[in-house]
Amino acid sequence: MKLLALETATEACSVALYVDGQVLERFELAPRRHAELTLPWAEQLLAEAGIARAQLDAIALGRGPGAFTGVRLAIAIAQGIALALDRPLLPVSTLQTLAMRAPAEAIQALASIDARMGEVYAARCVRDAEGVMQVQGSEVVIAPDAVHLPDDDSRWAGIGTGFAAADGLLAERLQSRLSSLDAQALPRAADVLKIAVPAFMRGEGIAPELVQPAYL
Image (cartoon, rainbow, N blue to C red):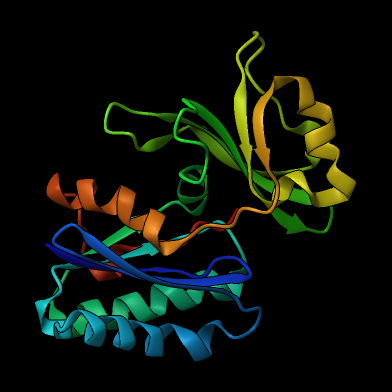
């Protein structure tokens, strides 16, 4: 199995390639350089792995939520490659991808990305039997002081830049409920693959024209 993955929904730009169990990745904090880097990185990874575009089985991508231009870029590039090769796409939630950065022992994670303008993107995720974080409920864009966890004593891994937004308001509010916190974490294409590979094996690829961005 050979999958290419793109994640450009935040200030981080990331491209990864899965080749029969092996993963190669490029990742960089590169605000406003995503369009410049994404395709060249994809070509570099294919060359490094010694495979041609035509050998790819599918293209995976982060579908947002995130920056408008970044989300559109990943979809446009993925659609272009997939249409040219007649391959399916595997769109993956950017918040779900971010949740995969939580510690391996974490069963539950609250993933949050700084949405600017005093708001954050947020989603609660729970790890399934395959080790994949699955979004529970809805993904939202919301003020940090309006984010809530279930009204019980469960503890959650806090992950993502939303916890640093608004002077760390979200982290301060939920401090007693967090088992761990990484407020610098950003989504990576290698984690898109951790979600997309089992999805592809389940036959969940879709036609390129059916992919919808997650604009919240």
